Image (cartoon, rainbow, N blue to C red; front, side, top):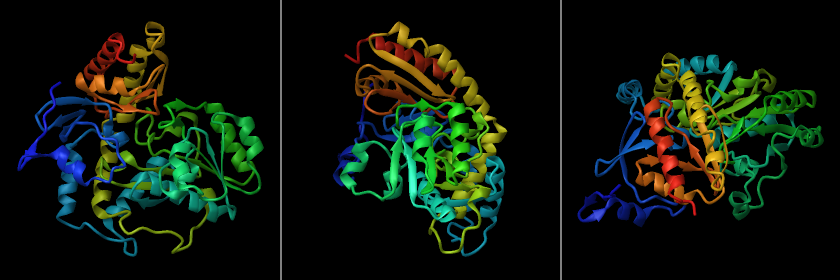
Length: 400
């Protein structure tokens, strides 16, 4: 696919952005200017099937009419209203969100990392303890508390020392958890599917036993649903596959249809939180709340969790035999719903580049895992095109 750069005064948008960006992102040579449903368009009008999905923020697709209308209406009504006042949109969102999650309260923030930070602070407040246990290969964010819970050394080491009291145990290993959780443990935090860690689903029996162990030893059970929430895995929240009840549940990404927004859901075991123990200026602002109300309605009314389950099953059936057909290139295929990963035997970067040339945008999950996070509104026909593109890339020896 031919790439073009839009120009303003003979300077491309790529050059313009490159001149002033922070430098902390490895950018692809592609300028995206528009989105619709499961498609993205570059400045030359070329269309791509989006399997990046805003890194998980576009579950209901790009420019969904219901969310666009909600944002337009609220933008002309009220943008900012801090939580020292009550607000109509915030009240409506809190009621809808807590009912969907089956948890009575929520702290509204601006991002996944902020939601994780809130969960960690609330766990310490609720228990009076300082220790936090997280899983190896887990990813929870880049602020200092969330970063300390993130296992990957390349993220943590440049900023060490981190927050004291954090430790990591093997994922899906109950024996390790039994040895690690003590009377000083405030919380154990896990992902139901480790997204950044390679799209690795955990085992239901493990999660249920881990939850029981936390209860027995007085620790909070935190389930990080930042990437897995809002229909991605085939349920509204991934922990619902296994009948779990988190004490704290950080969410974000697709909660507001792509607007920056997050929420930490709070369970009964946390108890009452006192004023001034935490806060945020922009969290729960009326604009994002209006977008989130519309987003949750779309998820429910269009049954996008059910759609993710069905399409994820199709994709697994379609590509599940890649390790057999391409055994020299593919080690494993795994996922839950439309959180889908293909572990390669070589680096994923050449595969991502080759897929882009074929009109498919996808993500890595580490150095050797191809991750697909398409909007849940994607069609089965487009997923078939994605599957054919992946087979074409593998057959073309792109990973060599």
